[in-house]
Length: 385
Figure 1 (cartoon, rainbow, N blue to C red):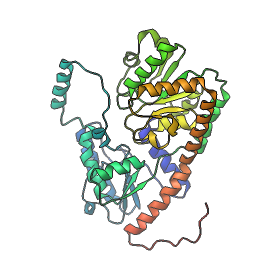
Figure 2: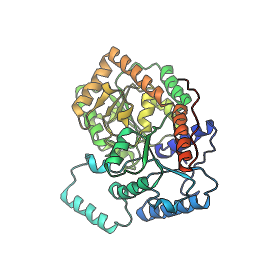
Figure 3: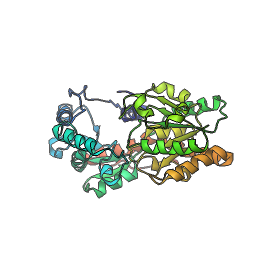
Figure 4: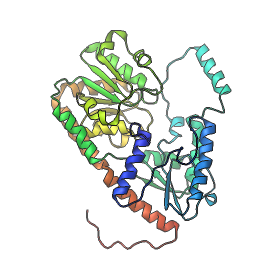
């Protein structure tokens, strides 16, 4: 599994953190369990069946199975009885039903073409709303839902998950990684307070249209603002497609890095002074957490994901471009506000150390495993905080 993609990176790092606590944690992808590609609906349904088969075959090998929360939509009695099955949703799909994500105002012919294409490929494509059903079924049948944020837990419970125990356990960042990010920025003598960075794929869910609008407002009043997009490849496969969203006269102030290696990020962010993350729907956004952990004041939308760790003073109502512009302008011109916000970011990020997160998860998993197996809970003799 790759560390360059947040969806898999968090699994690898969480397993490593559990390993440091003495757990024998193994990470499996589709290939390791004998499944094929999961890019379409048929492939994902095949993966679900293979995953159940894999767990049943190895029921005596694992005490706990931590699975993506739409991968086991089967009755609990068809899964290993002594194994604690934990669903950990990277993305809660009902958010896509509740939250309106801005998209371009496509022409009528293009909209019609998209509908025809969707009908023809209805068995191949699997939309977020189609994944909502298997996610609810999985969360209803497992022993524990490990939600990444309280927002996710509340949304799943409101959407009908009633029988399952919920625990909110976030993702994290290793202390060494956070130090590396901060050290790279401190080593660079950055005097330009108008360099802005966005870490993540450039797509509608992550507010790409808002990014272009925010920067257009800033450039209209001051052409010295610069924007760097890191890891932009996703919905759009070429730099040209991404640049087409921005006014031609300010293209020289835009840098697009389609992909980067995980080890390159500290140097890539070293010259940046302000983070921007106007995403409408997230699970637990690693890119945003890394910006915060590096000490970058990051203007973000108050939406699922970033809302739980971005300091309140730099959160913006989703779609409120004017307030986002005003905050960036203030960060660029007010050293005291910038310094205060940097300190707030670093203070918040310190709470998301992987070892601390894993310790909390370890205690919860052990408690729920004992409960599943009908074993007595250990007596707490003392605690040091």
